[in-house]
Image (cartoon, rainbow, N blue to C red):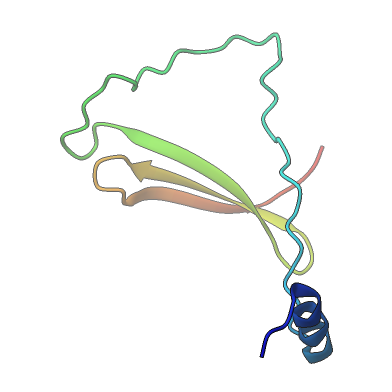
Length: 92
């Protein structure tokens, strides 16, 4: 059976299995500011053992009633989490 994309979309809609629309990419980093830009001290560093370089990451997680943040410290060599924190996001 040969069908075009419109027929497939109609059938998917009828069965309730439509794909989600892709969201537009949003830039969240504001690079055009007057603040001091610090150099990357780890650019030429060779990480050959644990506890030589740690990286940090933070992400916001939407839960049913609010947002929480998850902060993690990661060892760059072993890729293991050294420390973490989960807290309630408050906007000031």
